Length: 93
Image 1 (spheres, helix red, strand yellow):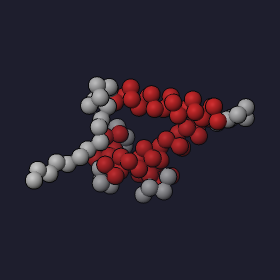
Image 2 (cartoon, helix red, strand yellow):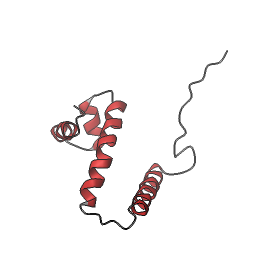
Image 3 (cartoon, helix red, strand yellow):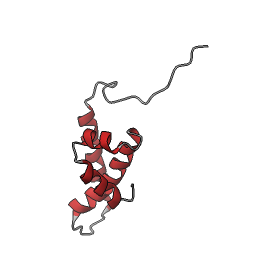
């Protein structure tokens, strides 16, 4: 019996660029956020966005690198100390 490993289809498998796919998802999420505001005012949106996006972003990158901060920092283009500080901020250390 042939065993094949199943993997999630990537954007490039679908003929899309990963950057475009990510930006489309962010755009849809932000449009849904504004639709859900129902007329309420919003302030400090940039800080809210960063907090909402950075934590799961760093979490996934750290899982991908199996907790290797050096490798994760290289992937992210960040200094290791900066990455450690961000992981601590979000309780991911």
